Image (cartoon, rainbow, N blue to C red; front, side, top):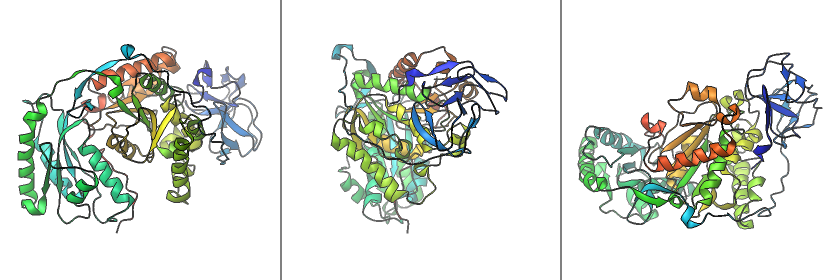
Length: 515
């Protein structure tokens, strides 16, 4: 992670590193305003989160932010000018991956000093942060059925089961009209299997149509699943159709509720926490406040024995060498590079997507000119510790510490992979204000700036803009986020849970050919 402690905030702008040739506006800057931190006068109207030239920048000179090349000037840029994608361009460059050369083992806290949370211990020793009954569709054709079953179990009908967090339907638009074998089907089955057996799921009802390519029997065999007291299946064509399957599903869930309610929270080590790291709707402040603060919390979590999953492969592109250097081995570093190469050389060739340079319109309006600049901030969520393993999408995460999972940058798809891999908590930073929540793993939302937090306080759990405001240090905010991890894992509801988000955010990665 870039050293975020070197930033200097003076008046209306922040210099992130002494060697940077741009500064970031902390508030609206008008033409003629003095920018004290750089000793310049603004030549443009600049919005918060956007960049100004701290000095004259010559054509073809690198644009440096956090002492890192993020772009190149396509024209001479005078001091005080607005710097964005209109006068810069992204140029790829060779990176020295230097695998494992900066690896440093984690300095774990003594067992007696490690934190605990109030978790639910499953029969197999895994620990849950929530307690849901899951309804999984094998194919889109059974999506309506599982949603009708879930909708029947209103809060009023569940009031006698206070320890059950809900009955949730995980529907999707896949399962047929796709390759019958190979990576797309393997990935879908891995994702469904990960949800069906998630620690936060106490029991699962899986429903299929009967003629789909993703047959329940084959899915179960591929994922080593066996029907039993906590895993039931129904096939619509065998059960009697839509109405009869809904009725049978409701009765099956009713029968599961008493045992599902028979749980109690008890103190467990934080080492049982696996946090999926997400960012969406990023802005120019994300790399100054929310992302590095989450990185501090991750470092704390890892020292306590916990696990954090960094993902969104397109959003580490350009800075992946900062991760490979911290890898615990050459093999782990190479795994990450292989994923990057797959994206660049196979998956995204010739396509107008993020890994090929362009960020979303919201990111762009928030001050991010290209993917390298976004990646600079996105990677900070992972903290400063060693990279212990690299996983493919939805693979079970079994290694403790800081790990990486290959996912797209699209948040619902990325978080779905992390949860399928075992994340029992999601931490999501945002600068523009993403409205996201997830089930069965609760989602904490971290705002990068105070104006957005104040405007969207019903959706945001914590205001990392306090770092920019000067009311909290980076370390204090990181500690506050870590404490929120513990409170949320212990049952405290997040803002997204209070709003009822999470029923539509199960989105498996669709990478195959439809036909």
